[in-house]
Image (cartoon, rainbow, N blue to C red; front, side):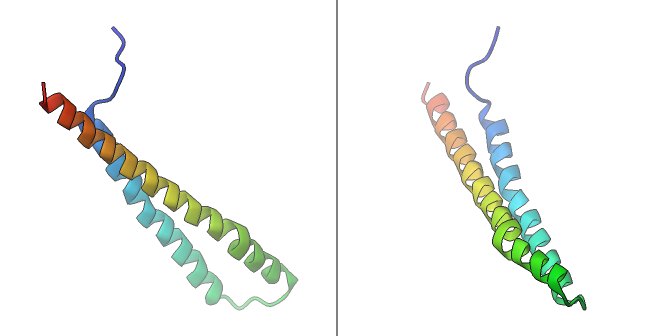
Length: 89
């Protein structure tokens, strides 16, 4: 028999796991910014990398963090809704 729906506990776990990934994304962003700031590197290659980092890469990581946060909150809310409905039986 196939299942339609979700296991509330597993869904909540997924939501928490997604939200925990935000810390990893923030750590990557900080590590690269720190390493770049502490690297002696002058020239057009650095300028290009900094432009790509600031304009694309960091922005993409920020959006990924926001997406994980939104998906995590959604999973947690759906889990709570399912638990409420299942408890009402």
